[in-house]
Structures are given as structure tokens and as C-alpha cells.
Amino acid sequence: MAAEETALAIDTGDTAFIIICAALVMLMTPALAMFYGGMVRKKNVLSTLMHGFITICVVSIIWVLYGYSLAFAPDVAGIVGNLDWAGFIGVGLDPNPDIVETIPHQLFAVFQLMFAIITVAIISGSFAERIRFPAFLLFIAIWVTVIYAPLAHWVWGGGWIDEMGALDFAGGTVVHISSGVTGLVLAILLGKRRGWGGSNGHTMAPHQLPMTVLGGALLWFGWFGFNAGSALAADGIAVAAFVTTNTATAAGALGWIAYEWIRQGKPTMLGAVSGAIAGLVAITPAAGFVTPLAAIPMGFISGIICYQAILMKSRLGYDDSLDAFGIHGVGGIWGALATGLFATTMVNADGADGLFYGNAELLLIQTIAVVATIIFVTIGTFVIYHIVNSIVKMRVSAEDEEIGLDISQHGEEAYPDFISPSGVATSSSIATSSSPVVQKTIPTQS
Image (tube, rainbow, N blue to C red):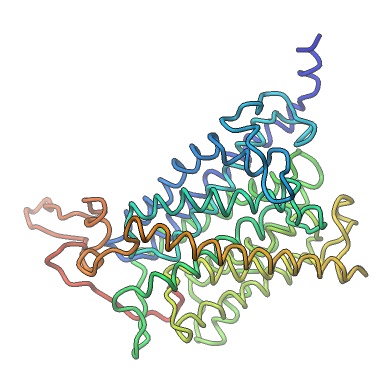
């Protein structure tokens, strides 16, 4: 009889939907690695891809051991979960009514794992081309433990931000503000890449934009699982999140290239794909709370302000290599605040009305959540950096940076020398110790 009741309690449609969504969110991390990988120089592409791939491995183990328990187990003082579910003990194949009612508890846990993974992977864009791999491993292990897990608990696990009534449908604060602000702090602490900026203001040219475009397209695809899946059911809210996600993404790309066209005289492919990501970031906290019409200004404005944020990094002198802060940090802040403007209970009765629907209090609550996230992440990242740097030097040596991280950190090349059919030796790689570092000037952000 008990087995029959368990079978009835699980909704097979919801379960199948969230399994697919979890797989889509997992796809986002290798997609992000490709998005980032195309924007770095040839000598650093494998190290950039490695950051994304190894993040999946490290965070997956931590999540089972204790990360999920810290984020979602029963509350301790509104700050963190207890360790009742460490090792996934008590995280079974039946629904847990305190967590989710129609899908297995373990499925919810693995869906949330994919969010933790992509958050850490986003950070890697800020310090690409200059971090030592052992330091990267140690940093992400500590960061996901003491920053991500408590923040996820604050917002989604019954912590103080959750109790305050802040809205974050799929991770504006938990994922994007946290990763973007962390990226900014690390970019400042690590310092600029050798040869970046200076009086001539040149940047490091992307080595393969088609890879970046493919990665961006796969991110757009996977993001439907990210946002629609956050409804945790195959229902109308999931549909609403799907539609607003697509709408804001398109608007973000149009907003970016419109501003870029006016400013530079030409719209670029890199600008279009970057604007799409900016739109995705902005709609994430609001996806299940706003109308499709509201998604248009949310995405369009995000494209503009994220482009402007990227222009500012040269003026302010910090080297956020692949714009983790410029897109995810700035776009996440805008999206969280815009949720306080555009949210409406006409879309989701479990949400709240925002300022444009007569409730100014929600905007205040959203602002408090944003400011608290920025302060917590900034201080936490600063402390973790200095702890890690005292154990394992964070930045590569000047020689290793000149050679490239693919060779200096991993002993391999993405584009090795080869012999052509005619017997002539050719090379598509500049990542050798005997070849110079080639730098170019481009008019866009990376």
C-alpha cells in the first residue's frame, strides 16, 4: 500500500519534464565553456574549456557530500541549512512535501546541482588566461561551500531573504549577481593580463568567434531548462517562463546591437550573441513572474547597460577577461531590480505585484536582496582569495602566461603543428614557447 501511495504521489509528467530540464541546465556549462573558449587566445582555449568541464566534476561531488544539505536542509537561524542531508542521506526517490510535492526529492537536488555548477563556471570568465589550475580548484571548492550554498539557502531554502519575500525565480541573485561580483573582485585582485589595456587601450582578440556563437546558441537553448524548469512542474508557469525567456533574449540581442550600431557604425556578431546572454541574465529572476510584454524592455535595456558596462572596464582599468561582471553581474542586478518593477500576480499568484502594479514595497525588498548579495559575495570572495593565495599562488608566472595556460598548466595544445598532405609543416597555434604572443585591436568588448 505504501508503495502504491508513493507512486501516486509522484507526477510522472512533472518528473520527466524536470529530468529533461536538469539535463538542459547541465548542457549550459559546456556551452558556456565554448562561449568563453572562442573569446580567448589560441594558447588558452583548452584551459578555458577545462575550467568549465572540471567545475562539473568538483561541484557534483561537493553537492552530494554536503553542498545540497547546506543549501536546502532544514534552516539554521535563517543563514544556512543543517547537515541532515549530507551524503544525500534522506534525499530519496519519494517527494518531500517540505521541498517539492510532485517529483522525487533526489531529482530536485540534482536539478539544483546544475545551478551550482553553472554559477561557478560563469566566474571563470573573469580570470581567464591568468589563473593557476591548482588555485582554481581550491578556490571553487571553498567558494561553492561558503558563498553559493548559504546564498542559495537565503533565497530559496527558507533563509532570511526568502522569508523577507524577495522574488528570484531562477537565480538573479543566487547565480548571476554572485558570479558576476565574484568575477569583478577576482579580476581586480589578480590584476590585468600582460599586455592588456595601457595607453593604447588594446584588448585581446577572440581567436574563434564561431565557437563563441555556437556556445551562445546552446546557452539560449539550455536556458529554457534553467528558467522553465524552475517552475518545478510541467504547468502554465513553466510556459510563461519559457515565453518570457525567449522574448527577453531576443530583445537583449537587439538592444545591444542597436547601441553598438549607433556607437560604432556597425553591428557585430559578437555583440548580438553577447546581447542575447544579457537578455537571458536579466529575465532569469523574473521569468515566472512577468508578462511577455514586460520581458521586452527588460531584455532590451539589459543589452544596452551590459554593453555600456563592458566599455567602462577599460576606463576603470580592471581586466574582467570575458565580461563575467559586465554581463552577469550588471544584467543580474538589473533583472532583480526590474522584477520589483514588472512582477504581477496576474502571471503567478504565488509571486507579488511590483511597483508598476501598485506595490512599491517589492522594489525595496528586491533592492535589499541585491545589496546584501553584493556585500556578502564581495567580502567572502576577498577573504577566500587571500586564503587560497597564501596556500597556492593564484596567478601564473609571467613566463607561463606568455607561453599560454594550455601548455604551462596542462601540457597540451588545442591546435598543434601538423604535416599537410603536401609534406609542408604548418601550424595553427601561437601557443608555443618560441612564438610571440599575437595581440590585435577589436572594437568590441573582448
